[in-house]
Length: 439
Image 1 (cartoon, rainbow, N blue to C red):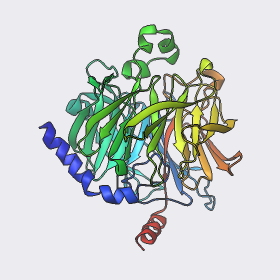
Image 2: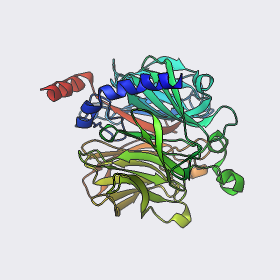
Image 3: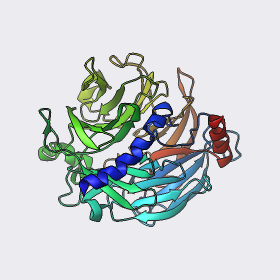
Image 4: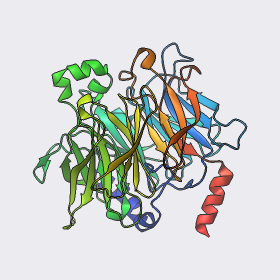
């Protein structure tokens, strides 16, 4: 049965491997290479998946749409919001391969919401709620939504049995039907033992490579951060590995020791590159995953982010389209860093700016001229009091300095805690871009 499920997924992947190797790009460089509708110019809308806060507005998790086109009369304003009717710890989102639908998940209730963003990007509609993840897989906490051909590959953080960090990946088709599950490895591969933990997913079709990272389970991420840090036993339950999978067979082939909870993964996108990069939250390091001279993948720490002794807590990262630069947000000190990746073996920080009392997600436009930052990490981990700023901040970037473009105060506008962001464009622009790419 497991082999049959694997073939259902891998046949679709193999069918377009050669195409994706040539056109494996997307705006906002964390997106799947199988996604169509590249926005190389100005994005029109920014969609923000926000956590509900009791007593704030309707208290529900919601998808908030903001006008991001400077030519628009409503530039920098909230133009639409849609609530999902409850609080499930809204976290990450991902487009389907046709870019018509946006899947978003809750880390607490494990529900998955499917929004139609293709029909009218300025006014998304909730078209489906998927609530069988735990029943079908035993997994909990859907985190990363990664498009495969006609499929959605979901990286999960926890499990329904003991709510710890041992978990796996699940696959649904674009209609929302469950297809398959893949357990994160817990045994040893090439003398390195898997911890079973999961977090992010990133694919490099040209290398037949699927790379995963690791974080922690529900027992930790739904608990007050101060309590977790003081609990010696709890601190033992964070991921310290990354896994390289064979994309065609969906079998784990290598496990890398990457201590300190490696989070977001970004592949270098230019043709001929053979490396990916991640940041470790607890040890404040940049790690490079690269093939050596013998064709074997290896992971090594290549740079330090901030002062590890102060636990700056690196969170989201955003790589530039040419893979020569990397944005890194550190949550605790509210700093946005820029690293020169011209030599990925030796990244150099060349710029930093305090962008808020707490900062989490960072998304750069494909052309590199705009950078967006949100503030919320997790409902139980965000700061309190005056430091509990909740915002989306947009900046212009000229290669030397971040300058403010606009800001949305999510607390003032009763919208909750903003987390993940995705870009869309007017349908006419997407059509013209697709037409130009065909020509």
